[in-house]
Structure formats: C-alpha cells, structure tokens
Image 1 (cartoon, one colour):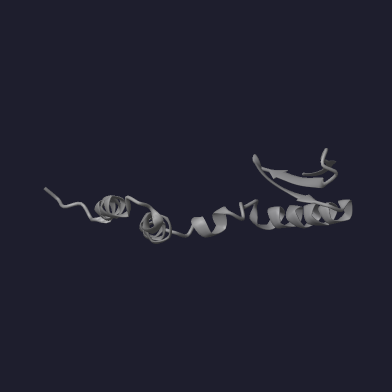
Image 2 (cartoon, helix red, strand yellow; image 1 turned 45 degrees about the horizontal axis):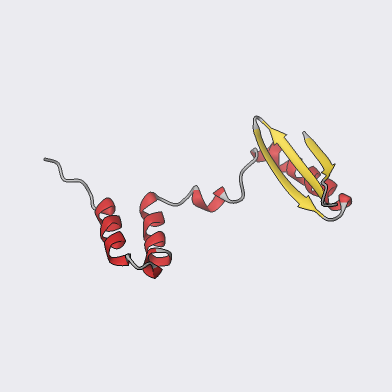
Length: 97
C-alpha cells in the first residue's frame, strides 16, 4: 500500500510497503510522488520490493567486494601495504590440514 505525505521541508514523500519491506522517495511535486507510488506498487505486485542500492551488491561475491575495496579505498590510505596484506590473506584459500 502506498502513502504520500507532505514533509516539513515542503517536499512530498511517497512510501510503498509490502510484505514487511518498504521503499520511499521524496519529490518536489505531489503529482510526481503519486505517479512514482503507483508505479512502485505495480512493480511490487509483479516482482516484490527491491532496494535499488542492493541491486548491484546482491550479485557481487565477497572476493569482488574485497578487490574493489582494495583498489578504491585502501590504495589511498597511509597504511595501504598492511591493509592490502590483510585483505590478500582473507582472500587466500584455506588449506586442508
């Protein structure tokens, strides 16, 4: 079910809730909020609610996430060598003893 509320900032917030999951978005015009809510309800009926931020994350493996973190975040840190070593250790396969 969708709800459209006016926020104190003057913006309109549309929220759709289904099966315990919710999704919301803010708009400057009420008509845009109503239109988005209607479309979100239709999408929810067909495929269920999905977080747009989780869409890409749900198909990445832990190894891919660690590689990306190492490339984008660790490389600009002062302790990059130590952290890279630790990340590589986590990615190394376990040996059967």
